Image (cartoon, rainbow, N blue to C red; front, side, top):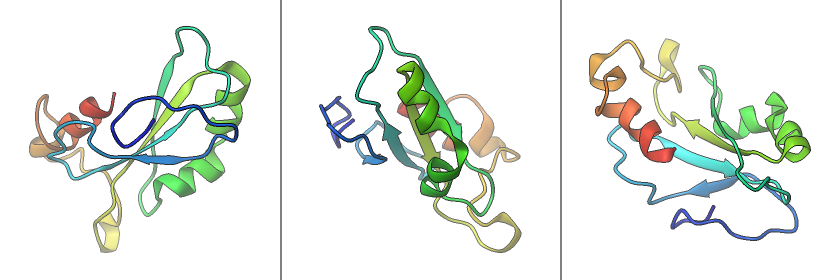
Length: 113
């Protein structure tokens, strides 16, 4: 996916930051991984990293790119870029401002999909 949110051909798939994916009230970052051989109607996996991780950490250690290459599906890695202390880079699903339909981080993730 490119910054405008459209697919682009690539000979060597990598993790790519996507901007302009819609409203982003949760302030999340979006990254995509598109294998060179997507199936005709590819599935989409949404990957959420754990606390203190980044999208790149999860991309490198999760195995999702390997399986995306093998089975031809796309992966979106959502990233919570902020937070400190015990909540460092944690998605805030315990806050109704983030975890209810049409609000905060939930809406940001919806816009990514």
